[in-house]
Image: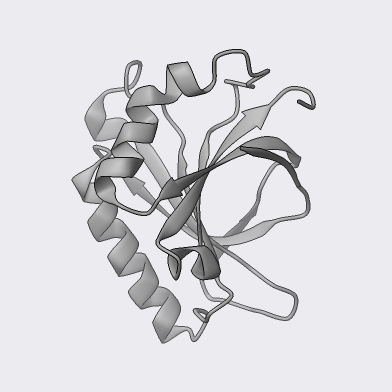
Amino acid sequence: MIQERFENITLAYQRSIGPYGQHNRHFMENFKQTLDREQLLDDQSVIFGIALDDPTRVAAEKLRYDLGLVLRRGQSTSLETRTLEDGLYAVFEVPHTEADILSFWKDLPVLTQGLPADWRRPIIERYAAPMIARHLCEMCVPLIRPL
């Protein structure tokens, strides 16, 4: 785990409303097809997955999940854009498999024990093309103060 500060990140994004899980996999495939059509995907692309609601508090059919491509300088898009809130994150490297990602979410209470986690902000799944090429992704847990 490392610590990283996110600053000035603008996302071209789409939102899905409905149950997390298998639905998100299809949403990701459709999102990447949209990015391909707009010629935004390349070997340096970074996609964020952001679960905006706690499934223990929000009904499955109302859960919001954003997928966003980090826009680099000079990139434009017809998609809606939003700015990610600046802040510190603890970054966990996770094998890019469905089983390992599910395991991360299941083990989250243990993995974050003792961390100054900021549970008011969402955890971000980061899918950076160079990491995906190595079969890895990252889970970014927001922090209230440095480690």
